[in-house]
Length: 619
Ligand code: UCC
Ligand code: FAD
Image 1 (cartoon, helix red, strand yellow):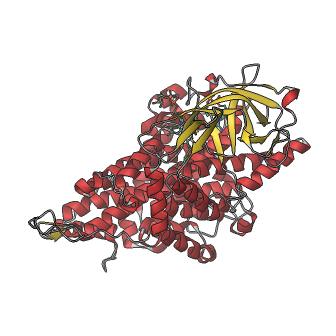
Image 2: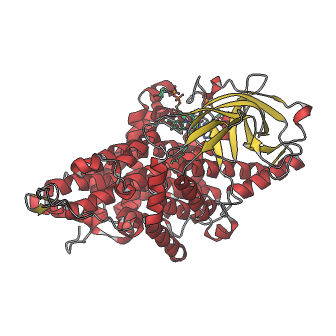
């Protein structure tokens, strides 16, 4: 049908239409990501993995992937509780988009890269590779990255149990098979895992867990898991208040022992009853799905457990300690999710500024607009470094035999200290990146004006969706104050002094390097701030420190980001990287330009930070 001839043309149908912004692919365009890639990886690894990162970066914005994202967001999950014959089935229905994206993540090795032997040649760099790819993927994944994070954590936990040894033969077989499936790249074979900790009485405080584990009775002994392995000897009954991996094939969960202590358990979610070839739920029923602000494609449920058969993981009563292996992995995923969503938001902001005109000028030529973006980019660079420093520490801690001396980041990774630094930085990074990304995505929305607030059908341009989703990053996997509490647990715990010494060693070695390179203006404030925060930590009681913990976390985060930004800038002498580092340090982490340069010069630097184009003038 052509236009209605009776209708008069009006400005609703003619006149100005905004040219659509076109963000280019993230891996090539995101300067912070590019710098991280070069900073944390030796050249030979860069060459090996670059084609895969470029492939992923192009793939995520292809029409098919965007359509799956739109489908997953539009067709949210629901539960078919009963079948037509009145039988309770609790069938979780997810969209095609969700399932396809989950399969894509599996095929692309989003979990596997961190574990698989093929990538053993990357040693400690496997984790950096994994999370660079994850960064490119996350904003286009409709949050299938949530189950993949928990799957990664579960794989790490089971691998640790297998390495430790001491398992019974059947248990070992079950854990080995589960591990193989969790790190699979074939979606037909792969498993995802959940992490069921939270109950009504407490998510932060899991000591109030009510779900109970008792020895299983003999009558169920003949049921098996889907691989024909026997089920575990524990029977778990109770209620889980939040489960985000409701479609998972397995789960790691907490339950109370008869003596009241808390243990961790592993269970398949589906089992085969005797004489049946149709898998059934392993004593799980879905009470309802949660209605949420964001992460709408993700099926988060309340689960009733009734005689769920499970294997205990580790020693009885050590559940919190055992499951913290998962927490420490998922918190790293959380941090990279935060910077990934924010990075995508900024790429949309940049693209919009290139096409939107105000008073006849492109936004990218309006200094006040670019100044706001420049401030955001400084914060983003700093938080990217924080996230990927933690990732690099994770890789180094998991591969103690691979040397840490062949990258630009080596001063930050003294082999003997990586374990302690990782333990300290994991909660710190989780809490700071989540908060920064939420605030940052708000700025990204605002930078697009009214369009930024819209639930754009084209998910590649929908910042509102990213913003809604990001808000959970400060809540799940431990709230901000719980991360502060964990930080205090580390610095005031039995290895607190060793940890502070480890960080002191890095500060000292970096500061010496900076002074030798003529960067006293960075060295002095960082040295001073470290001295003050260390004194505060050492002189405060645990309670005092927890009370004022957010400010301690902020100070520590500022120092760590400064160390990374400075080392990175010195690695290649990039003027833009020098400027970012100087702004971070002089503004005490607000990202503002306090150089007092003339308006024209300052605006030129803002533009370089946001849009690149290095100037001839150096330092
Ligand atoms: O939210 C969830 C899933 C959401 C979806 C996942 C998405 C992933 C991101 C991807 C984005 C797309 S699952 C639920 C998450 N729940 C939490 O994070 C719980 C928050 N609460 C805590 O973190 C608490 O700090 C607890 C529960 C871990 C600690 O409680 P307690 O009972 O007070 O613990 P204790 O007694 O202080 O610690 C018990 C032991 C101690 O060791 P020992 O006995 O040797 O002294 C602690 O040092 O556990 C040790 N421990 C740890 N060890 C505690 N936390 C840790 C840790 N993080 N690392 C190592
Ligand atoms: P509470 O623990 O009651 O916290 C309430 C407030 O008290 C918070 O502000 C908190 O910061 C504060 N607080 C608590 N302890 C301290 C302290 N020591 N010091 C200072 N302040 C403190 N859980 C799972 O187990 N598996 C899942 O798959 C899962 N998926 C989720 C998905 C979504 C979308 C959401 C929103 C949550 C999910 N959760 C899941 C639950 C999540 O991990 C918890 O909500 C979170 O850990 C907080 O626990 P809570 O809700 O009981 O809040």
